[in-house]
Image (cartoon, rainbow, N blue to C red):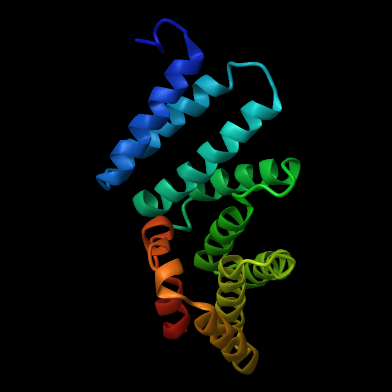
Length: 191
């Protein structure tokens, strides 16, 4: 009703809520439709930092939903994470930056773009090392280790992956498997 009445702010909020509810039920095709509608309505509003912040959250959520619905290598997934990464560049120290970089890493990795995946992993790790938070460092070491492994740089890959495994705390990082659709420790161990 809010959408039909062009009452944008509550309409966007309800589309986001619908996307969150369908995501919890693993109905990811529906999730992508709801989030796309929220983005479409968001674009009708005036440009502002707040709008960019909401769009960043939406693009990140949309990219994650596309991973589940279509896979890391899908064009829609890449487009959502690319736009989110562009928005991160405008939002200094956004809490979404590490997750978005991790998403872009996955896009390049699954497309066989190993050099690009290594570059994104290096960016992720460099940013993570400037923080006193083990989660971004875990993500960065794991991503770099995976990229290096696929590029045949096994000694360096092993070193990075061991660092990721050592950083893993089940209490802190276990629930992230639900957010990222993969467990960071088990994927590091697999590589």
